[in-house]
Amino acid sequence: MNKPLYDPQKGKMRVAGLLSGSGKSLIAIIDRQRELEKRGDSNFEVVGLFSDNPKSQAETIGTSNNLPFFINDIRMFYRDKGAKLNNLKIRTDFDRQTVEFLKPLHPDVVIYAGYVWATVEPLVSEFMGINCHPADLRVVRDGRRVYAGANGVNNALLAGETRLHSTLHLVSAEIDHGPILLVSEPIMVTDDIAMSFQDKMRYNLKLLNEHSRKLFARAIDDISRGSFTIEHNGHLAYNGISISDGFQL
Image 1: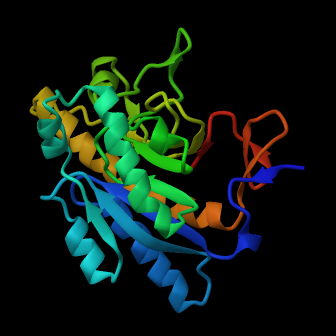
Image 2: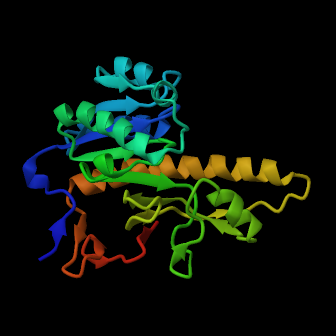
Image 3: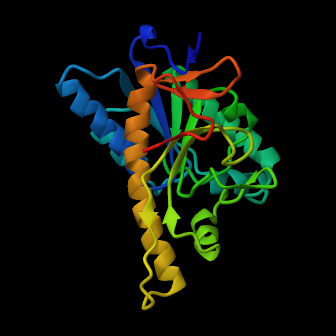
């Protein structure tokens, strides 16, 4: 028998958010929660949020929704340690503090709502994490996801892709390589020759981010209802259908 990512018999699924900027994906989830609550049909609740950036919208989102929030300035953290931002040993210390903030919230899932930093073992292993990547992670070459990483949209356009997708996936120790949950509807790449490459990249990234917010809201609701399960072979299933490469909308 398949095991659900979250068992709805436990009650409402507790959701915490990580964000570095606007937190629009988290806001979309909160809005979905409020919409479902009005119908008496919500099986999840956002319980708090964390940000690495004092200039983010974490305080605004937390205060306006009566949610606990914690801000730990990652740049200052590294500066105090005299280390560069790519030092993953220091990241371990930083992520350990993030875990200590989140633990009292007892989250069942942590969403990476525009959280821009690589996370490491203290955080990755402590909570089930979900991230949305603005590129198609189903494209694989030599066992590697071609459009993983910060330059996914750029690389997809350079490769001549005519259809772009956002990909919602479980967080793993290897960046953008966790099991895929949902894949967005395609975005057709504009062939407007008047647009520069950079303008085309920004335009398509904006569209992909809009898709990502919809994916997040849908997936959190689906997970809270037990729609995503793990099969005996370790693959994911969605409403009883095996999805080795995610479920495309």
